[in-house]
Image (tube, rainbow, N blue to C red; front, side, top):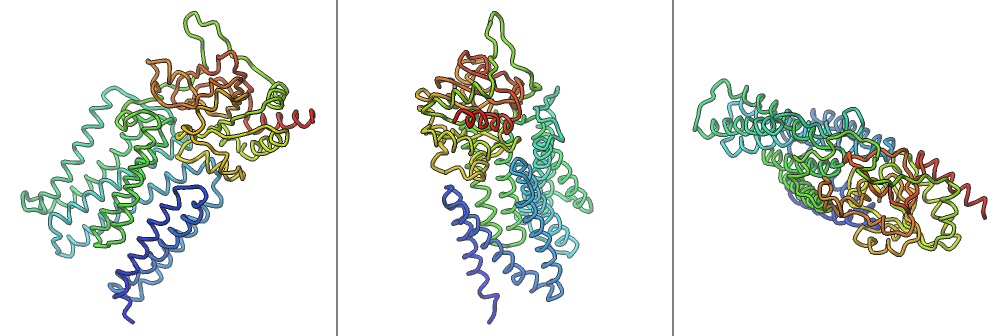
Length: 478
């Protein structure tokens, strides 16, 4: 049997599994199955690609190199999935995303050099695919590296603004485009770079790497979910371009799917913050370092601190409780304690639900995955639009680590950088308890007026320890 004849059909099957996998990821009940279907399709795609090109061009000698690469990738994937904590999952996504973009850039470079040294002339269309794959992939690689650094705390998460920033960003982008056009024009016979063509390729790579850095550095930590989604779309486009370079239809399909889904998600995330993508990329929200909430002008309000005992009494006599999770919950690994608290309250007849803001945490769906890890029932996880009207009838809103997504300034303060962003209407609840380490501001670098509201009680401390103290007090009263 000639396996070459079956390769297009197998590619089609793999492409269908990618589509089905994405469809499965659209809901929590089907997400696990969708992930497995897509993973099986990717394994099939990698295996058949070996017979499509590697085996045909290099023979059985390439088998061990291919298997070695697959083994390294498998170990990295399994180790990342099993060992990395849920709080560090956004960083891992940024790393994997950057690796995909970097791989696409390397493929473009190596294929171009191979063709040039072999005397082949791919034509301007082939060089255009190479240039686009190189530029987009390199931008994704370096941008993802900066995103990882900000999320991991290696780089300050604040937005790094500096004098002449716009000029630098536009200048690097323009230089990158000109270098790419020069290579395409050379291939089209419109200009002759001669022996310097290869040098221009490396110049283009350097400019693309620099552009990724200058693009992401001025973006604050509050906008990292959108940045991760955007860079994911970049990687998809780079992979699609690599597919054109390699004349591999499955790479084109897979890259296009990733690029399209990443673009859609980016738009949805921007909409959730009521901001344009340009505003996310260039407004520099979060340029100021986080500071403690302070009263303004003649405002005489002060934050009211409460104890775990006070909180337990309030929760114990409530009928409706809404938990609002944020990154503070993730950092403290408090999801299991929160689930225990909810179970205890429900045993007393309290109705407990969870309000999930689209940009809570550090990546899309971060809170959903975190709570699902603690076996919180899916039906209790409510999106912002679904639960916002219920806050006014809620006895206690328990905010754990969420900051910017609960800030009433988004509705009332036109001078605020988050003005107009849809928020969870926590301030409309009858009572609010905020569990937080301190009064410091969140990723956006602005004060949260919710903390000065008369009906808000501040329970300071590590989220997990604080919830466990509340549980202990509730059990005492049982």
